[in-house]
Amino acid sequence: MISRRVVLEGAMLGMGGLLLGAAARATTEVEIFPVVETAQGKVRGVSSGGINMFKGIRYGGETSSKNRFMPPTPAPKWAGVRDAIEYGQYAPQMPNSRVNDYTGLIMFDIQPGGMGEDCLVLNLWTPTLASGAKKPVLFHIHGGGFYGGSGNSPGYDGESLARFGDCVVITVNHRLGAFGYMNLTSEGSQFARSSVVGMMDVVQALQWVRENVAAFGGDPSRVLVFGQSGGGAKTSILMAMPSAQGLYQRAGVMSGATLKLAETEAAQKNTAQLLSILGIASGRAAKLQALSFETILAAQATMESADRARGEAPRSFSPTVDGVAIPGNPFDPVAPSISADVPMIISNVIDERAYRKNNFDLDEPGLRAFIARRVGEDRATAVLKMYRDEDPVATPFILQARFETDEVFRKPSLIQTERKAALGKAPAWSYLWRVPSPAYGGRYGTPHGSDVGPSLHDVRGGLNGTSAESVHLADQIASAWISFAATGNPNNPKTPRWPPYSLPARATLVFDHETRAESDPRGQFREFWEKEPPQRAG
Image 1 (cartoon, rainbow, N blue to C red):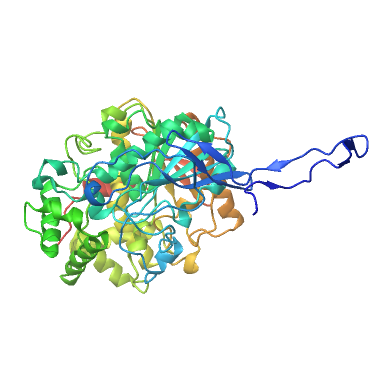
Image 2 (image 1 turned 180 degrees about the horizontal axis):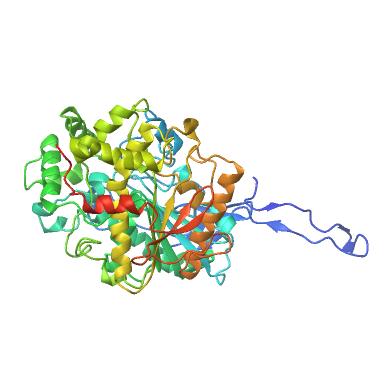
């Protein structure tokens, strides 16, 4: 039977107790399967290329049956040694297909580990297991809104960042969709936290980090929580959760600025619809805990399919203000005071909404008609000219995405940054990613997620490519995140001087073919959308 310890160099040569030659050869053993003792029990990971990897570590108990829709429980303790060399389960969700080319580019169709409700697990990469090493910790929350994704996806692999930054990287799985956010508060007090348990899972994971990360070489007093898209939204919410305070010291919101949460009334209507599909009467929601997760997930898919058939946006389940775990909206009307001392980085990419579109053959008249539906016929020509003048060679498809990005992503991002800066305590930094993706001949422009791989110092994904420029940009942005985690300030030798955001300067680091700091980049577009009423025309 082969031992888990592999001896790479032979033992000392000798005969009859006598050494061969004047000096002995040293015995060198490399631990391929390191074991770390956590507060819950011992875990066995795997080491490769100088990085120790531990996957599928439990930070909470199972969430099925009577635990479904309930707050998370701590991971049970165990005896012996548990393997942490393969990914654990990820939350029940609709599988991602590759019908849309963009899904393949971000590898969201690949979610190893298997779907299931034993999904309160995390993955950890570290360059050292010395308990006194005190490396900065980068706790990354996956995207996918509140409905999909996992920290197991290849797009969130932390090995390269841990090696490049000499830091600890952690990704996390938590409950999603109806399982994490269905509002059952009208069904009884036992379901009082049902609409926020997915966020409570993330807090539970951060509690595990505080308790255990030192054993993996990390510093629990230097924890950066960050994520893109849904990960940015969850980070926004954590800033307003009392139970999360003190568990992290910096925060990053990439393309996910969240000011307000879903209204309780709308959330409860979604719940009523799902219960109706399942044939469960009002007041009998406890029956949900006896169903298989597959049955509930199928009902959720049925509800979303019916919405699409009516030409409506599919309804989804997301957190609501419960008054306790989430006392109020995270950044509305102001930034949360309970996290005033936590510095932030808040960012966007310039053509986010390209990921939601596939009308690549859009022409100039079609672009004008698209803009007119939002701003009216009388202003459409002038608004189109403003966007066209900024980028005369951009395709109508890209300008369509940029126009929508400015309202849906960039506007709330700037509001969040300004409200954070207005507290006058910990600073906020802003960046704008403008580097076009080479994918499919550049047809997407700079779409949603273009900065995710580089932020993790990983450019192997389809959105970025491995050109010299791509690698250079990854060096720059990953260094900023690492410096931010380590010191609370993203400035570092690889990027230009990056001032904090303040009014009226609105300093922003623009990642482009030549990275630079600018004051109020694209200011005319900011001013336009500040004045534009939020209602969509028609």
